[in-house]
Image (cartoon, rainbow, N blue to C red; front, side, top):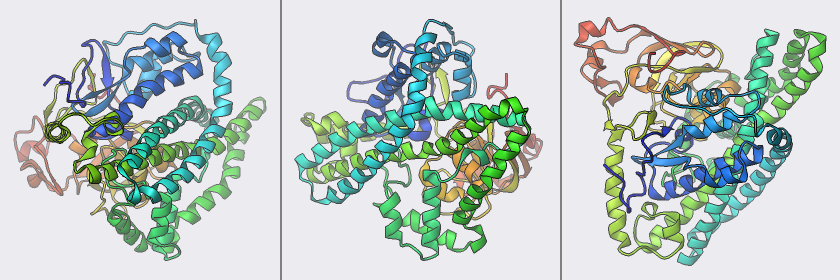
Length: 557
């Protein structure tokens, strides 16, 4: 299937380029609609150039001429891995291989690198300014965007066609601004801080990175408000007023968020209501904040006196700045939500599914035969949804029919320490209809709305992500084990399996399978899948290795 002009969701590039959905797939999961791709694609290509320029790794010519950084493949957004390689090759104290490995988990054997020190003086000048100024900018943009989101959502029902187009154009511009400042904060501030904090804890031999990373992030605010609603201290409407832009597939513009469909939120509030008061996340956050100075003193006491001054500064910065990760993300999701609302309003007035048109088509003159174009794009998107593609490839990925296991290997990264045993719940539908307290949540990806379900879980196993991914950050703050970047954990594990998750070592041990015969038949508890590759029958299936190591090369090399 090759790209066609009307099909905005498949646009492959050179056969020598390397691509991955691992990082961008967390923010924009699954097969996007044309409207979503037009927003994510434009910003996703411009923003990395701007960030590399502000941090000093790119010259003005690089910012202008570097090849396309994101493209759509069968409806999925993917990032060009050579971009991270170029950034790492020009960063003091780093390499291109390190940068690629840190974000994507491994380095393809066919990738080439070109390390250079030519940009070091520029990086040395620009990086401190980026680190100093970005946190203040993130907070300012987030506060302004929050006020704007509240005012625009209230206007949506009364918008005229032209008014909705104006609001959509404004939302697209704000999405670009907020995603850029959020990403600059991640790369210039939070990622370096997390790396140095991890090294500090390893040198000291005491302390926990999660506990030392501060409290009160935006994701915890969701959990705390849901808890308060479950106790009757605030209403569902209060939660929606603060967090209504969250919900299933919130990174996809056509997804129905809590302000449009509160049913998933109400289910979560009911689930929280069953918990004992001793489980209060509000009390947990307060306790973590009170214990933080003691934990910091323990780390400092374990260090030689000569290293304590710099370590004290690092601990202070980590506690204050690492929780900002969710603040910037909240802002760009609010911008996307206003675009969602304006597009839904346009669809009502134009009497078509406006999410199958691009932002440029909706804010300008509609393309000829818009209704027919929408129908063709909807059918093509359905075709893409019936396919799966690997998480990493060179050139153009080879799609397979959905449900066929593309790889029997499993790998991952431990990002939140601790060991937990529990029963697996594989969740691919973010409506959270069947999740029970204490289950091990296994999922392809998460977004901020998943924080509410994570609070009920005993451990997390996620197909994509890294140390600063949403699942990792929330798991550390909740104090539950988490393994990310398993790539296909949801295909190997099934609902009802009993497992042991080690969030430090990055391992998942299957203690007991849910139902051997039913699994062999291709029917897993709660979903239908194909049997595992290479298993000839129920008896052979029992010989499958029970321990799944998640720390090695996903290709098994």
